[in-house]
Length: 241
Image (cartoon, rainbow, N blue to C red):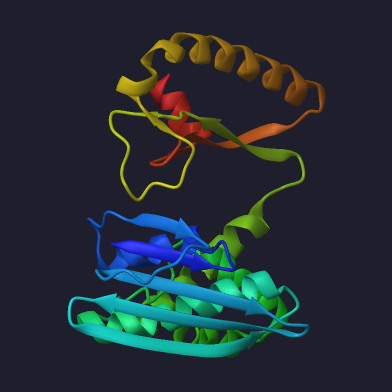
């Protein structure tokens, strides 16, 4: 499938959305190029004005050809256009495939972050409505996001000023998943760097240990991994080591 982006650089979000509907898609991206050839293609055109951005999305897949367009507003016109483009494309893909993803057009790994930000500007019910009506998340999954946020908030509130959590990045995996957005590499492709990485990582952990000791900070949890992390409490670490 070919993706043509005219006047914008929304390729990352659009590509993630396309993979919701077509997990094994092979996408060929073109920027500001003509798209008069036939074949499976999606064209996203944006025109930024003084106070709005006009988005047009054309989809041509097999015998399905449809176009949708609208104006979008916001303080950040790039973000408004990116969200608007995904919204228009989502509706067209849903019509084409007949598939309604429970997570709607939300493709990030942290939907709770969106909910937290929404609650700062809106009330609880309005934040839920935004998830359902603007990101097209199902009511069941929207409630799940809300529940997780409440649990996260309770954990955050229990943290003390002299405590900290440590993230240890392990950017190597046996294989790299196609959906992964983390900075990671398959072991086969970067195996020679692992010994040096481990040496420097151990050195950095030692330095962090010295700094936290000087500041009288207590380690609460350790987050180990990259794309697929493991979170351990200090009590769990003691039982392992």
